[in-house]
Image (cartoon, rainbow, N blue to C red):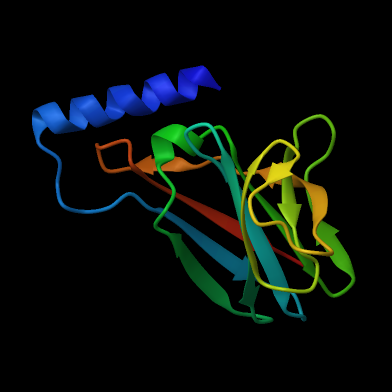
Length: 154
């Protein structure tokens, strides 16, 4: 975990030296729901020393939606970003080989910051799950922004 803090500090120093733009970091995830039912999706990502999860975002049947997470920095989370989705009786999640541990609340919108099993402001009913990894693509040259597309087919 310390390497993440060192990497983040290095990035901040580098950006400060070359002159950063005023734009904030962000990850844009486009979700294509080609199924006949709505999908609810949650995301999990690495931070400096902590991890984060946020959900639920709904994508209607047959629709696409781009979700922008402005609190995510590509350089910190490119290897630790994932999703957990449900809809129409199906669940898309990680597995023991490549999943990312994180937290959800199965019935309510949530935003959690956690350190392993320790969650800031825990909610009754929350559950620990495995998120499926997402390969993000860096956008721009600042190492702050990234993108990915998730497609859910029948």
